[in-house]
Amino acid sequence: MRLEWLEDLLAVIETGSFSVAAHRRILTQSAFSRRMQMLEGYLGAEIFDRSRKPIRVNEATLAQTDRIRSLVHDLRMLAHDLKQHERTLHRRISIACQHSIIATAGSRLAKDLLARQDLTVRLHSANFDECLGLLLTNQTELVLVHLASTIPLPARPDFFEILPLKQDHFVPVANAAVAQLVGTGSVPHIAYPGDIFLGRLFDREISSRVNPAITLTAQVETALTLAALQMAEEGLGVVWAPLSLCRTAIAQGRLLNLSDRLPQCPMELMAIRLSGSKTALEDEVWSILPEIRL
Image (cartoon, rainbow, N blue to C red; front, side, top):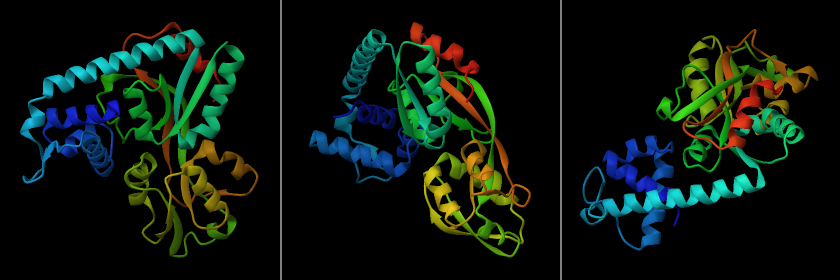
C-alpha cells in the first residue's frame, strides 16, 4: 500500500467530494479514481458507498477517520526522517523538472551543481502536476517548472517559496514545408492534452488569438514536448513549445519560429520548494540558483 493512497482517502473524507479531493491532490479525476480502486483492492474491502450519487465514503470507513489520519501522520514523519538522514549523510539533492525542462535547464543545473558542490543530484522528469505532487509528498526538495500568469498553482501559494530564474516564451514552430501552409486556411497542428500545463496554456493564451482565417487541425496529440518537436521537424504540423527548448533547432534551420504569423505568449522558468525549515544543503543549493546560467 502507498502512503499517497491514504492521503487521497483523507482528502475525500475532508472535502466530501471526489472532484474537489482530486483537485487538492493535483490529480485528474480518472487518475484519482484509479488510485482509490487500487486502495480498495489492497484492503480487500469497499470503502465507498456507490449506491448513492455522488459516491461517498461509507460509514465503516468514516468511523476509522482518526486512525487513518494518525497513520498518515506517522508514515509521513517516518519517511521524512529516513529521507533526511540519507540525504544529509550522502549530500544528495533531489530535483524534479517538467519534461520540457529536463533536457535543457535541468541538465545544465545538474552539471553546475556537480561542479560547484560535493554532492549527488537526482533528477526526476515529470509533467507539471506530477512535479508539484512529488514536492508536496516530500519526494523531492526542489522543482523546476514553467509558470504563466494566467495559470495559478493548483495549491495554496503559502505552501511554496518561488524563485524566478529565467524569462521564456511559448512559441509556434514548424518545418519549412508546414510553415508555407500558415495563412492558407487549414494548418496541421501537434496538440497537447488539455489536462497538462502546456495544453492549458495553449487553451488559455493561444487558441483564441489565432487568426480566424487560419484553422488549426489537430493531427496528433502528445504530452511530451521533445516528441512534439521531433514530429514538427518531420512535418507533422506546427507545435507551440518553450523557445529555450527549440532555439537550437531554429538556429540550425530545422524549425522556423512562426511568431510573426501565429500568437505566442510569455512564460517563466521558476524554482519552487516547500515553505518551512530546510536542511543546510537545501538552503545552499537554493541560494546559488540565481547564479547558474540556465
